[in-house]
Amino acid sequence: MAGPRWRYRWTLLSACVLAYFATRVGQVAIGALVPAITETFSASSGAIGAALTGMWVAYALAQVPSGALCDRIGERRVVLLAVAVAGIGALVLAVSPSFAVFAGTVVALGAGVGLYYTAGTVLLTSGAENPAQAIGLHRLGGEFAGILAPVTAVGIAAGYGWRGALFACALVTVPVLALVVLRVRPTPPDTSESTTEALFDRRAVVAIVRRPTLVAATAVASLAEFVAIATITFLPAIVLALYDVSVGLAGMLFTCYFVTIALTQPVAGRLADRFSWDVVTACVLLAGACGYALVALAPGTTWLVPAVVLAGVAMGWNGPVQAHVLATLPERDRGPGFGAIRTTYILLGALGGVVTGTVADVAGWAVATWLLSATLLLAVLVVLSDRMRGTD
Image (cartoon, rainbow, N blue to C red):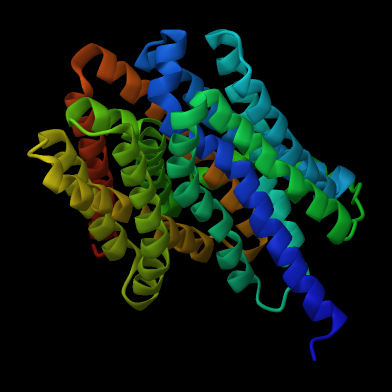
């Protein structure tokens, strides 16, 4: 019979997976609803892209303060704060009277959701016997949000509009908040000044990111994240603009993209352990470049599913690149170093929304999609160049 400690670990895991799902579902749903939101507010693709870029910038910037906040008030309270902000943010988005209110709320939503991941991961792995396995299971919450949110949001929007879909995202957070309040034990704060100051030492952060052994990995992650954020923001809009398909089919393809990511990431990670991070990373990014090229060529709807699958395969870069970064960093720098690099590449990748949307406004969606393909090819070249330097 399982003991109380074992049962609590599973309760905690369930709560964290659901909390990650609840904080991510609204972010992902917005991408599937972009065409309807744009029409309601008569906003340009560049404007909606800028708003979502702001969301990802706020998301990236919130990760470092999240660690300090955990020390100040405890991880459980930070998790509760992030889930509550996700719910309130989705609710405000649903009733936004203007695009200005919508855009401002989107940015605030990014900041609130950005508080979650560090707190949830620390809460879940503290004292865990298998922390790596726990983190892998934890990430399923975000992947399930990507799989379920787009098609569900489009389905709800068909009957109740995009505002109804975002209202449903807000409702998802209510039972999760109740679960965390009732079933997750309080965590004591750590008011150590030295810890808090270290988290905000900008010179140390810059020094870590500029290490020669990590420059290539950071550059690859930034380019790949640029494409990832552009895809989350605009994939349904791209498909609708280039192909004569229904909104429902565009939403299903969006879901297919996230299913592919969920299936690819563990496989890519295992292959990277067996071979090397650079070989696997180059292969998945090259597959993605081919996928976006297929979408841009628009040879017919028959090619849409394989093209979207190849685009999803590109996102297998996360495991190999992140494992390489952690293996390269000295043990004493793994926490702050990994956080600094993650903040850097998310900040740079956040430009994907505004740049892709603006290119689409100026030159059309086909050119914008070719841009995504070219960005992944550039990332492949960075990987190969780094590998050649390493073999000199």
